[in-house]
Amino acid sequence: MPSPQTSTLLLTVLLGIGLVFFLRAASKDRTTIVEVHSPRPPVEVLEGLDAWLKERGWSQQGGDAERCVLAYRGQVDSSIPLAVLLSLLGTVGAGSLGLVVRQVNPALSWWPLLLAALGPLAGLIYTRRSRRTEEIQIRLIEPAPRDGSTLRLRAHRDELIALELDLAESLELASDGALLSSPI
Image 1 (tube, rainbow, N blue to C red):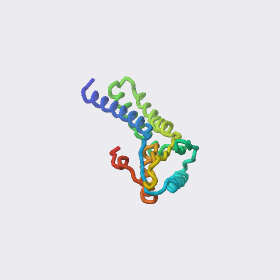
Image 2 (cartoon, rainbow, N blue to C red):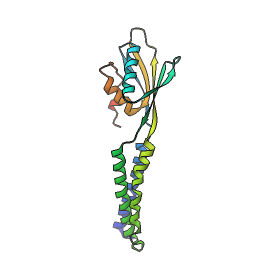
Image 3 (cartoon, rainbow, N blue to C red):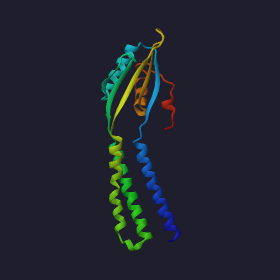
């Protein structure tokens, strides 16, 4: 087998491996716990959070009064543009692999190009794996009477970032800033 064909085959296989790892990362659970503080009273902060979450489509699923925990559930859908992009990339990548296999082994005729038909599976896999039910848990941590409210939030990282950006001014919420400064 000539060297250029071998290196092209290797690079094409590596691109396929990269696509698989991207699919795994796109549907990975990114649940995070963060503590936020507000100088406002707990009732005002919890009512603001409740209104914000319900506006975004979350429904309250009860909680535990003894532990001061509220739980919300919501359905997270996949990104249609990302699913289309992944299908396109999968099709082009599988078609490229088919061309390389055809060049390496010409006796196979044009059959390896049928690999391109597997490309839309990338978008389908992403869509199925990323569509799931998420949960947000809000726990009131008992502060000193004049210190305002401290909450421990357990949710998907993206939802916590949106919460911090949207409610930082209106509820005077502040955290350590780790969510907004993280490069990921």
